[in-house]
Each structure stands twice: as structure tokens, then as C-alpha cells.
Image 1 (cartoon, rainbow, N blue to C red):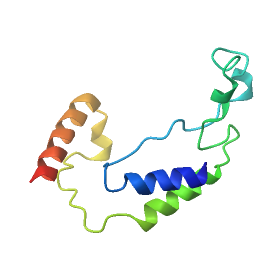
Image 2: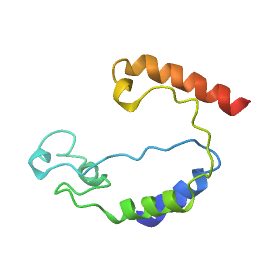
Image 3: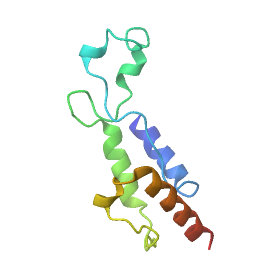
Length: 107
């Protein structure tokens, strides 16, 4: 999984502005008797972190890809909201920021 994640992140580098991996963490054993985990046992272990909080090897592989291939000099001036203010209107801020990002990347 670590090798695949690193290769996928590398391949996406020039084609996407970001990526999302499913899921953050594995599901706790106490949930395994509940749907969908009772029948879809493969769903239990998709996380980047184990249920006990330990990082899986994919976390280190992705961190390495991010460090090695971080763009130099990206202009992030289109981000005009402070992190702490973003959640006052997340939907509105996201729409506005996306419009600003696309306008800046097309010019």
C-alpha cells in the first residue's frame, strides 16, 4: 500500500491540485459487528493509521513524496482567508476560494 500510494501521488502531481485517500484510520474492533463491517470485512482496514493510532507505512511514503516534490514558489496569494476564520462560513469560503484558485491558475 505504501508503494502504491507513493506512485499514485507522484503520477497525480502534474495532473491534480490534490488528492484524498480513504480513510483516515482503521475502524475500532468494537465496530466490527456493525454494518457494513460485519459482512464487508475489508472495510475495517482502509485507514492510513491503525485503530490504535500507529501510522501505517503509507503515511511515511506519502510524507516523503510530498517533501520531495513540493512545488517551489507556488503563488498562494489567492488564499485570502485566515485558517481560523475559514470555518465561520466553510461552504461559502470553499466556493469563493475555488473560484479564486481557478481564476489564478488560468491566468
